[in-house]
Length: 285
Image 1 (cartoon, rainbow, N blue to C red):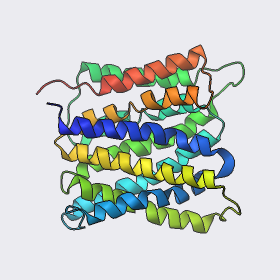
Image 2: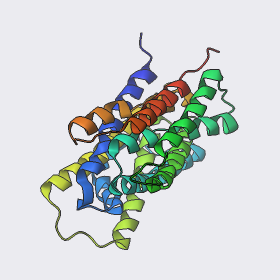
Image 3: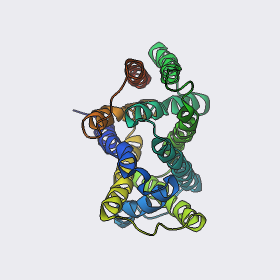
Image 4: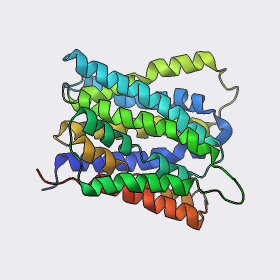
């Protein structure tokens, strides 16, 4: 029988694979900050559904509540940086697999703080992750340095820390409550961003639809991964597996967005995916 945590991890993978490209499809119609703010409306149906569930009542360990809410704050800030990378002109087919290396941070933190162990295959995954970053930054004739790479490090670090906090939260409270608190943290971020940046004068119906879908797919994916964490899954396995969402994003970016990737970028993408796969392989107890 397929483990419950694996089913929910695959749901998260699919949702995030779609979410990863929606900001690119919005393009310059919205700024990265406004992307984050308006997409928050798309999470509300998920938040309401969680609040109405039996496990959605906000009670229980203060530690769990704090961990879940903090994970949402970190993720929201990381999202803004991610949207900025896509708006910088970088290809989605290269940005998505690079930022998908965030489980590297989760694994390292899980080893240091949760005392989870890594095997030689996972160590090889860490090395492959570093090699992938190198290939994404090999100087080319058109650009001596990929400036977007430095900006991409922000979501990698913040999302990696988010993964750890999500796992820690589910050690104290249910996955459903963890997801609800995680998503609720996006609301104060949205309010602050709306005060900091003028609201766009005109927003097309297409942009509104994409922004709402951006929030909904992100929310549904996070609900799925938190339920996976709460289903006796280990952070060092679930996070890397969910990080394989570029397998969904890359074909869409090439076919739907018409993006082309160079041989160097192909090596970087393949190495990044191999790194995430290696990080997901854990030895039996």
